[in-house]
Image (cartoon, rainbow, N blue to C red):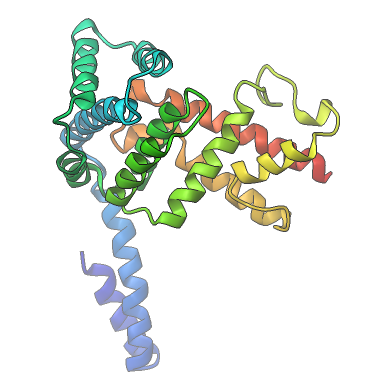
Length: 271
């Protein structure tokens, strides 16, 4: 789309000449990008392709990840079965998921072609890429430890997704910290808020900051901004709109609750 660029450039020339024309073209470009996204949302056909790609990639990689440290543990199997159960899969889809998991755990499985296919379909949706890594890290940590072989697999997946080493390390730290707030409740849910529980321990407060990807030196406004960004990235409606299967947003919903609880702890402590 070039309508915005043309209008912006002409308007810039009328106001002040070549320099302001360049500014007008730039502003028009941003308008075109926004209008293009509005006029061309993810189509139903593309959503179907994305859902299929996410499903196949996830369960194949889950099997490969579970096998990476030498054997598939009972905890990892239980985690995969719990995921299938929470998704409410039909018998045929469940059988397909199990087949993908077993294929991923086989000796002939290769990450490269799987990730290349995923990126061709889902590569422009950053939230979906984060959620894929989120699921994988959660399974890897299901037994309470992140083995070096598992971490090597995750790093390779992260590189395919376009995440730097530093960003991957940050992602691991945040997810590990967020998991400390699992099922702890929040003021907006059925549980009680941290504000009514008394002061939190120093280690728990430190975990809350890590869960949001910030440190204690940040201002209230900066922390709130980080919190809102994370909530947006994990918002179920946004993920579904980008093509993530509706039955696979459960982990994102749980992650949102953990982030909210961590944020409430920080706010309560700062008061």
